[in-house]
Image (cartoon, rainbow, N blue to C red):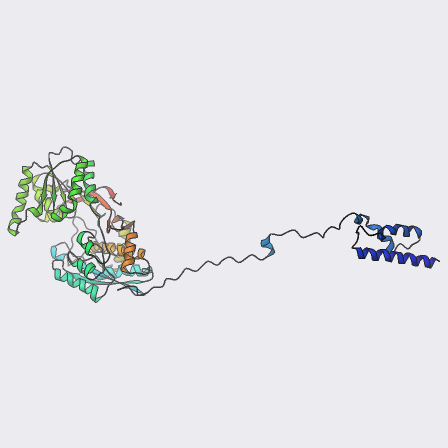
Length: 495
């Protein structure tokens, strides 16, 4: 009997266990879970290790759905998948250089240099231009050239007194050497040979990018001369501000020729009207030069006219020499826009004290009293290092210059300006160097500087880029031949 009861209990327990496994453990329709206590009551002697005793251990399962298995905390999407690799920085597009224009190859840019030897006129001797240009272009090339292209200079010398020599220099540079640009320029009509006839870029000291030359040019022109009439207008305004016209009896105006008068007369008249000063007499040297025989007497004629008009102030426009020579002996106060001709006037026999106190302007920082600006000094250092045995002495009173003992300072600084101007424009033009891109680069150069010229700008229609004006005064007692001294800081005329 005991065996039978034990067997029955075991079978009942197995039935309950099978039912629980079939229903998923605790559904509402599981009657077998209710029978487990009855079976246990009928057979208290059941073995403790029988499975039947474990059936009622989960009563809560009848009323609740089974809880889902705990899920792992949700990770950010970026953690679930590997982060994408950062985008690689794109490599700069390599510059592909081509033989983009005449005088421009994949590796080089040929530039021409017109060398103006002024020793014939007693103004001294510049020295040998070739080592100067070799040193300057080598320095540019050592810094990578212009977008990787090296500069190759070709030099053609000429005597400015002979037009045929200037034309020959043009042919040598444009036809024989096929240069991309002529730096420094030639002189007068010879510049038409460069920019019009040969459609070659012409930039630098001997270029005046205005008037007929600009109209006829078939290639870009650029110069570091003063642009338009801003200089004349500012000169008159500044004279008035300084009180130069105060107490004047009568004011006269002198033009060095009809070209100058035609160019600036309207502006001069307007500027005088703005300061409330009347022009008592207008002198034009061209009106008096009838022939060579009349040249000698013209000074006396002009002096008499000025004296008869009671003039005690004379403002000179254009090249100052003719005015300084003509009125220097009259004892009147003079002001001359151009300060470059005092030496010429004195060499003609005018006593330096007759010009004492004359106010003028300069377009560069090139007086002996000026400190040497950083751009000028850097450029000089390059050439002086290449030519250690040559003389580099800043021009000024007592500084002599001759063909036997040339002073390289003046020409070096001039070459520095010419080359720096070209490099800045060509860099702005970009690697595809052509006449058109050079013109675009020139038009975009709205702010620049050159040795001794702190303010410079170009733009569409503005190709004489100098915006620097500083006032100077002649001191007739400073030296045997007098000396110009600065009057304050330079004025910035940048539009």
